[in-house]
Length: 202
Image (cartoon, rainbow, N blue to C red; front, side, top):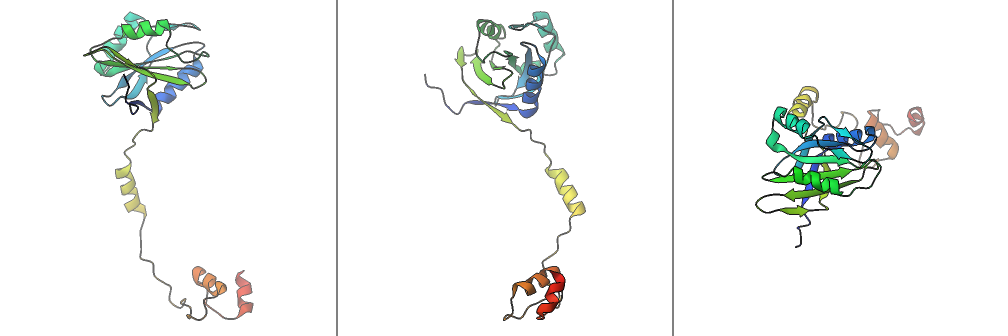
């Protein structure tokens, strides 16, 4: 089956930065969870209690249940992100088992990264049919800061726009548009034909 090449997962820049920081801090692997919108935008990456090794990360079911119970929107937590440390990005047998353990009534986005800032993304759909789409493009998206209102307020407060008007006495005769005279007009200096006078302004 051919998958639509336009399918992609977007991840907020803040979430991606947190993931890179945790990847750098971890000696080996680590896991985190994040929220996913219906448009497949990953955001709000969060850590939970875990024990990892240089080559494995295992989800503690009690810690996972506690994390979801205290979460404001547990139904939106549909992204599992983990690091392979210094290894490459691929789906190990342990990864496959973890994804199966996170199966739900909808879908799961999985992302694996490493210390070389490589990333691999997949989408698993659990209902109405079981489907895995690998090699999904991961796009880091800058957050919308919604600064228009504030910028408009500051602009109106500090900026005054006036029409462009030539200064009196600075218009040049049509037959004398010399560069020196144009420079004088630009700076508001008196227009003159005396070349000696121009030397004072150079």
